Image 1 (spheres, rainbow, N blue to C red):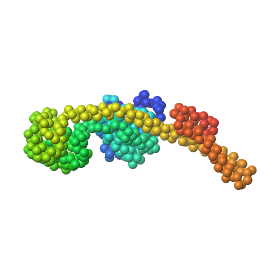
Image 2 (cartoon, helix red, strand yellow):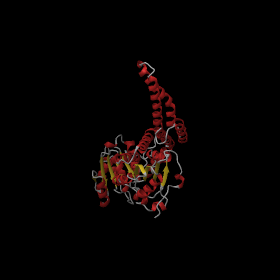
Image 3 (cartoon, one colour):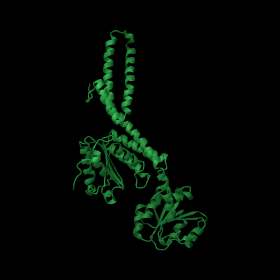
Image 4 (cartoon, rainbow, N blue to C red):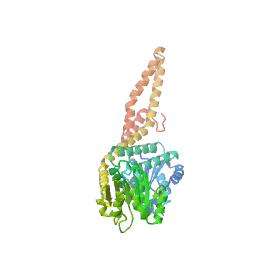
Length: 439
């Protein structure tokens, strides 16, 4: 196994500020699930890794973001090439040796690394555009890094800016609007018929993976009661383990479950319909006009097509759900430019903060030099001025120093990287300020 010894060539040169910021990562676009699962860190593993890397002399700050679709390490390096070698080896190569040979990882530096984190939190980099879970995962990563003592001023501020970007994206745009999975599409359909999902009882016919996903979505959104009916005992046992609150309806009595349900989801592998028109008609007759939403996710179809004829029964199939999901995804994609604007705005705020932070040591040094000069001149003048004017002279000279230094200080805080470097060099020469902070 050949360990990466150097930063990728295109990143080894100076980058846009903050140059000390580095990102190493994999995600669903660069690595298959077989690699991503090797690099998935649970909370305890992540905490142990942060503690291990925190003691490295080359690493000043770090934060690990690990989800089912990405593992990303953000770090600030005192010695960036050494920090890169150490982090890449311990976080990635140690668990997934094939990652280097397959070129499955990416590296970003400076403002590009910062922009990437903001875009991740805003949902732009997710497998499902705009999915909401990633913002909570970024929050958890920030809390963990801070509680472990792994993050510092720069990463703490960047993570706060990323969380702000993610929150704004979801408040100010429709990037997260509308269901884009079968589970939440069923929830959305239910809301078109019933005002409150909390008042609805749900019957799931089938107990496989799709049934479990749909049930989870309905339960998470507050469904009052969950019932399940399935032929096979093994799948049924798995379902009950995931949803211990679910009431089991024997498959032979599934129409009894229909009578008491408001939403029925059929998702079995049966070759013939498991809910026919006559059985549903009999169940509807006992419902006294109460509406029933029936969602058929089977292929072949699980519900007889003639059931559409029944009054107050609303039958939807896979095509309807896929159409709903496609419309919602199109709506989300239309929001991408607006979300990118938010990311750019929050990145500008972060970079402005970083520029100001970079300028503070010199500003403090300049203020000390000016204060030394002011104090000496005031002391010399006080001997020639009546005592009753001493306090006024102190106030006047302090105000003069503040006003004289205000514009240079503001310029240093707001200037771009090249401008600030040039201005710092000029100020050091003009005021004889040493780089070690003295003078």
